[in-house]
Length: 363
Figure 1 (cartoon, one colour):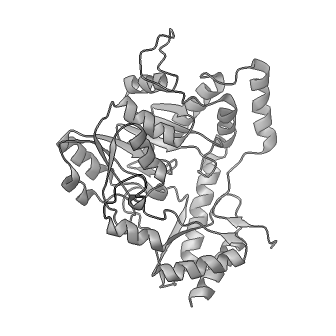
Figure 2 (figure 1 turned 180 degrees about the horizontal axis):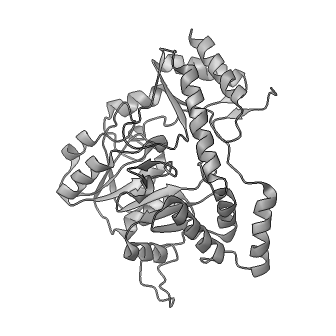
Figure 3 (figure 1 turned 60 degrees about the vertical axis):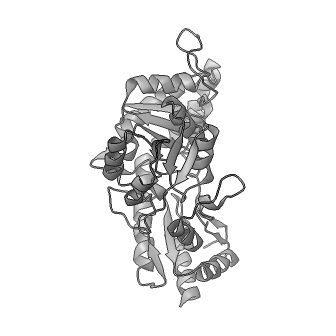
């Protein structure tokens, strides 16, 4: 085995020649943006693959969340999770809303539905949970709470392409789901994202918002901005979509291998999957202490292996941009969780090496 760096993830990429073949049409047409034919094809192909009615492709997952908030015309408090990437909170704040943190379930790592209602006030307008590491949220419990209190539900589904519940893509749940197509995701367009909704009128509104608020005759009818995906990014998405099923199956198999090899290690625990089927796009492990985590991380780094501390620190502790609110479960988990390398081209002997180093460091 060579000594090339092993990172926490690497992009899943179609062969370069297949991508180049699609790009030839872009060069021939001379259309690079403004809802070009490849963007439209990518949206159509992705809807078919995921069996969702409307997919609005945009520049990135953060913009997708902002567009969802804007399309639903939300102003007020949005209940969300502290165990996420900062973009979830940034999008809420950029749209003039206030994030309210609800602590997480220590097993699933998702927002704890049993703690949501206590946070609802007369200012609450929505719930914005995250399918953490592609692990489906308890969508039934969240919907019941939202319906009871007249709230909208936006899912941060950045990790969730390929995850499902009751035979449906996780992207089909909520008023809008916002996903990411960033290079690190199971399906990528290098940079990109999308909004998914079952409401055709809402889908048309999202399309207007992503193009400065223009309607079909170029009148400005919405308060929009530039959220357009380019033809080049869509071309990469089309090329990569051909390998989507293979990548999904590969992640699941490698996840299984990791778990089997680490299952006898009593100094760590795994994320629990209680609802639906995750996409196995990340392999997080939760150590007994931060001290053990740091020791393991240092040893892996010494062997040219680079896991990541997703998500550390807990977002509610970013006091330079938000007021602190205690979320003890999220804060504790964030100190002890480490995502191990997992991606399409990762070799099995690399996984075995990672596990061996972890076990030898702890035992």
